[in-house]
Length: 164
Image (cartoon, rainbow, N blue to C red; front, side, top):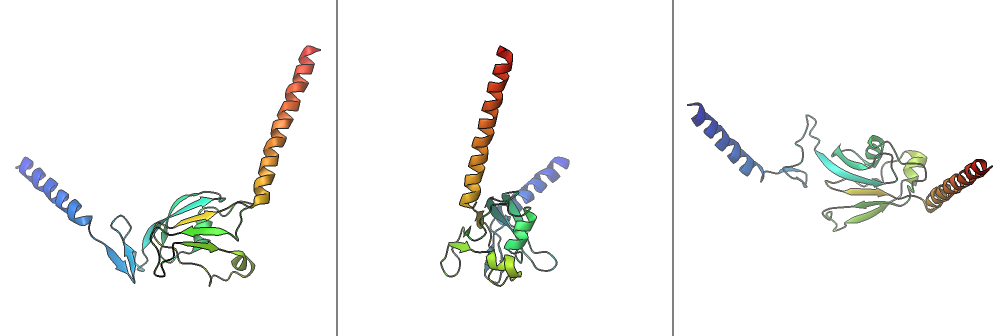
């Protein structure tokens, strides 16, 4: 009896797995695949967004459908010093209704006024890339060379002390 019950349970689980893979939910034109999350009590859908570049904690983040770039950046710890917030890139996995797959975003107006009206809505599997300013990158390289030269000077001073 136990073996028969286990077999039936396994079979039902298998059927649910097979047929459950093809289910999808729709929220005003937003296609939500089965690997995404279902809506919460307020009706917000959750999906994953990739965050790369000059930010404290890059990675994959699960956000609500009503979250915006400021929320995403805040969850990731904010942009690092030297981030170029005038040249943020957003790439879509699937083109939007206008057929557009990439955007350049300037957050300067938001930083000055807090106005979020120009924010682009995030979609599932979007990739947001925050570049580093050229001067910040150059400064980082100079600091690396400076550290190397300091270590080289220290090495020669130790050599001189040992030879005396």
